[in-house]
Length: 147
Image (cartoon, rainbow, N blue to C red; front, side, top):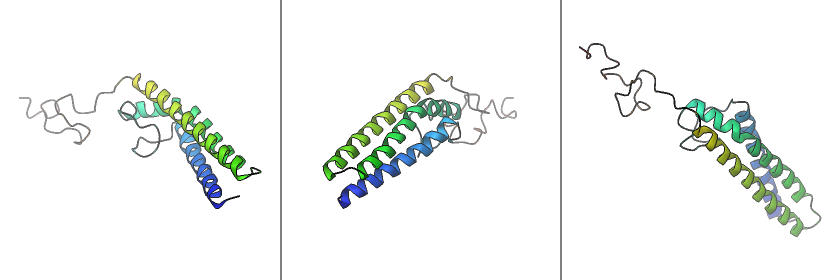
């Protein structure tokens, strides 16, 4: 077995484990909204509920991709020849990627169907509610300005 195949198999297994961790957290709705892990589209990043729903719906295909990656890495590392190992690693990586993309598409569609929640304390008076804590100073939030 070649050193390159060993490294590719290890990377494929590590990617599978990472997908399994993120997919497991997403399925249980324990993955916090972030810009690093999970399904990150405009629809899922809209609010916490959309992120949770989108990632929960997308988790099963992602977990399947994780299983394919880990099992494919094991098969590639145990293959009788380097050529068979490379083929197994490549097919497994492609299948894991396709399953993960499928999970992302399903999650994005589910998140886009979640009703948008109105920002707290904003009442629509500022353009950057997500950037400014509670908007402050707008007529709907400041009784002194409402006259």
